[in-house]
Length: 527
Image (tube, rainbow, N blue to C red):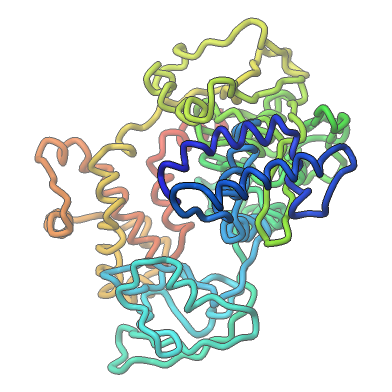
């Protein structure tokens, strides 16, 4: 669309809002009987005139979609419109599956390289980590720059077939591997392992439809390993289904305890209380949060904190206390509209203010950084009007902008250093780890995962080799920066090698060994 026209989108959104348009009147079923026909005709008249008389050609469909987006975003930061392809991708992650061949891959030197074969997927018995996929049905997968092109060749409806051409280390010729596409599970638990002989660790990345079942499965496995304490990591978890959060919170709370309640102008109050089905009520608990923990993650943290159940460790959470309802439209696009606010058991609404606009709302993390909040707990100030009391011990807690942890842990700047970010952005760790794994995979598989954790360390020769590799990849490493961040680089290098050799769980197990937030939680649970 012509750039000049884009300046009118906010105006059109405001115009639509003032006219009282209901989006569904066009796409989802006609008039509402309250004058919607008039509003519908009005906007169509405007769009028709723009389409027919505007100085440059316009894309009517795009104009409509962007107008709808601006309308919804003018309500609050979390009401929004999603085109069909984006809506499908978001819902796949929450519904817990998609249709394809079932691999996780990276582009290594312009080649699709298998990082992990998804458990329970169609490729589980025919592909392996380290395989290079060079063709799909005779069409090249090499040097594909657009992710859509790769997905277009590998994904497809269940029960359809694709012939994948594979380069595998140790094989002199390429292999033609037929794969029947099917339903591929998307797991929301990225890691589950023991931190010590009594403390289990679970990293939950989202609250999807199957997350509670995954959680129960991993809890059962950790109990067989002697778990008596749990560190539940919700850092970076942006939320998901409220019902899933309620089921998870129910695991830790006795029957009758309040978990959360929701209420809105057109949605009467609904209370969610714990049942007698919880299986972890006696387990010592620490919940990890940070500035990216939002929505359903904050429901868990708020329920535990208000009921004086376990410890909340980390930094203040994002502050999203709005509940959205999704509506699908006829063209498979969707929109989400806020229908209620949720409140913690003590009555806190932890939604942060959004009256200064979208940019200020999402820039608030930078404001926290500038205020020093990510480094010093005493840089955080709450109004007395936001003061609440926990339900059991009557401790002071605050609403109005996220969950403040019980134990504050400052930001680890070494993991956000510019050098590390550049190495990650240019996939230097991943590429180097694949090269190492190609040569050493069989010997480490024979030795075993636990042997790797205990005995592998990055040697001086490997470190020098990695520096040379990074410089060839375009990363300039100043000596003073290297001295400052060498320890973190060594840690990440070991973690990425573990990931390529074994799994995402192995990756986090290495990182957790030196994670200050995990260490703080572990110390607190032992005390």
